[in-house]
View 1 (cartoon, one colour):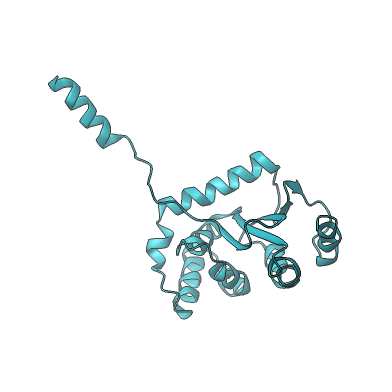
View 2 (tube, one colour; view 1 turned 90 degrees about the vertical axis):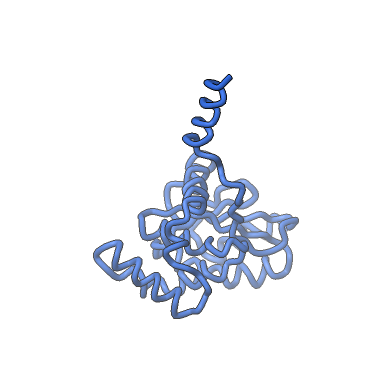
Length: 192
């Protein structure tokens, strides 16, 4: 009996236990909307920043804010800097997109540098300048969030064959046309 107790105790110590803390997805809109949009993106991707700047505002105004569409932003980091930025975007774990949009808006300011240390310092300065109440080091070292971000990437590859960013999925169908609001609107109008 002592050996069994010792074995169970030893296994408990050395077997990693999954955290009960769930990381919430970053989303906007009505979860019950008829149109469900998933965007796989990398925070170091210039095309993704263009989407947030030139396409997303009209998409939000015409479909998300009106209750016609729900959008979820999924992480598909293409490099370590994008992974770290994604961890920051999820760090408050409130499901809100404020930090994500800020990081795209400021992308040109934080992706400057030759090393990951320089990029991290740029990210840290932006986060601190905005008084977002984030502990940069705690966010960057959060294994739970890192696993969540990487699981998004794996899901994108396995489920939707994502191989570039941004990739848009609308009601489980990959959007294959050039990513302009005009093209999106044509597609979405068929679903309304």
